[in-house]
Amino acid sequence: MTQTETTPPAWRKVRVKAAIVAAALVLGGVALIGPPAQAGTIVGGISVQTYCRAHYGSTANAVVRYNTVYGWWCATPSGDRGFYAEQACLQQYPQYKGRVHAAYADYHNPYTWFCYSY
Image (cartoon, rainbow, N blue to C red; front, top):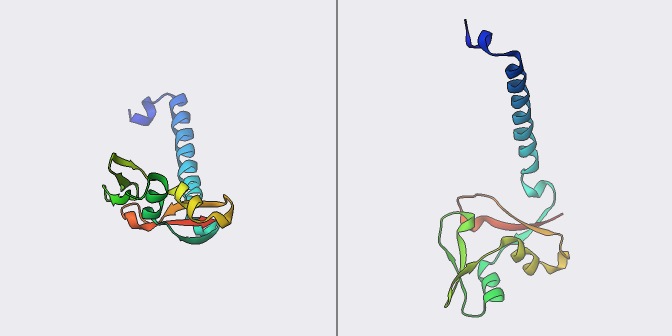
């Protein structure tokens, strides 16, 4: 007997449904995470240094601790503080009145953050 012949019919149905759901998630995910520029307009880059100083004071400095877009930190005399790209966009592009979001072009390049508006 082959594996298919020994597999109960209910399991075959579950496998088919799981495959359909997985395919839908993959295809839907690709549509949802496409380049933000398709859904809006790129308004500019992000100054991590400006963000750090605005949130943590004049002694804060932007530093890359890991070589990914999430590797940015704000170094302060009391230790590293978080960098939040979405907040940086809101702070640096107030003319868009909250309709601005952060995105990146390359996960492995921390310098590819940008802001877009929809």
